[in-house]
Length: 318
Image (tube, helix red, strand yellow):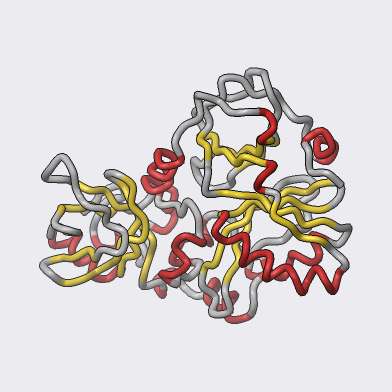
């Protein structure tokens, strides 16, 4: 069956018009069609959350590798004839490889249909519901991340679309991974990326070892993905991806994502807390940097896992 929007509108809320669209065009994201009646049942073992209610509400889930590290994030949308899977284009070959034996056993089909859809993101303070064209809209459940939109390529382009780089900067400020596959080489555990605080991982949907990690006290998390802000001493500065963050030449973390003044750092919590207590400056690639604790993690801030344990108020940075 064709994936054109006119045939897809029936199983979700009616498509709405799009005019002067100011959403962000996510050129790094694509779409895979998983076709067949048993699509959700077949996909479920790969995901960190349940698809039991996916026919009522799209789901954001993660796929972990055999070691329990983040491999990719996937938005799952239910259609009359299967599922649409929105993920990073760089992961699509790997996803199709994972799905191939499952599809063969269940009599399903899986194919890349990124040539039919554009993926866009809408932040909470944006409104694109003003007429002209069609799209499918679904919520991004992470804090202050707004919504996603699938728009058929056949509808043409908008001069008002924002840059994906600017959208990535927004995710970095929040301490949210814009895409898990792009940082999979850093071997990040779910709780290190704070998935447990975002409602995108369920102990009942992962293997026993990961479930045991999720049940462990928060103070057993020794590393964390946190927001990084650059305090430049010049008009331009180098890209910091892969660069080490140091305190008096001691390495405490590595930058895993970076756009402009903002990025994400995988940081060792103990030496970071010590630096906070001693008010010692942090440096990366010859620039002073700040590492902050996200406000949406406030529930953890007064425990041994958060910065308050080091005598620092929530929202302060180093």
